[in-house]
Image (tube, rainbow, N blue to C red):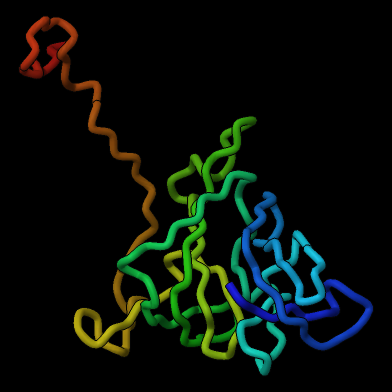
Length: 195
C-alpha cells in the first residue's frame, strides 16, 4: 500500500517520506508494525502503525487511537474479506469516533510455545485495519467498529444501543453425548450414550 512515513520514526529529521508498506510485523505485547520501502531505497521493518499515514496532510495520531490492543502472537494471518472490501464504517477510537474504510484484517494464530490469549474465547480478537477519513490508519477489534451502508444497515449505525455481549462460549459439534465408535457401517447412525 502506498503511504507516507513520519520521518521522526526512521530518521533524525521531521516531515514525511513517500513509501510502500508491503508486509506486517507482529510481536506479542507490541503494536502492529509494517515493513516499508522508502522512496530513498531504504527498507525499514518494525515501523509502528501510527508512523504511517495515507494522506500527506494527516494529523499525527496517538498510538492508543491507532490501535486499541497490542498484537497477540508472532503468527498473524492477513485476510481481505470481499464482503468488507472498501466498506465504510464508524471507528470507535479511544478518544473519539472517526469515519473510516476497511483495508484488511489481521487474525492472530496461537504461538507454538503456549496457549496465550488466542485460546480464550472471550479474549481472542482480530484487528480490522481501517483507513481513517483524516488520512491515518487504525487497527480495531470487531466491537470497536460500526459498519454502515445505504442498503442493509443504513448510514447511522448505533450498535452500542443494543444489548450485545462478549462471546464466551465454546461450541463443539463432537459433544460427549453421541457415540459412533461401535459401528463399522460406512453410513453410520450416531447413538446417544446411556452412561
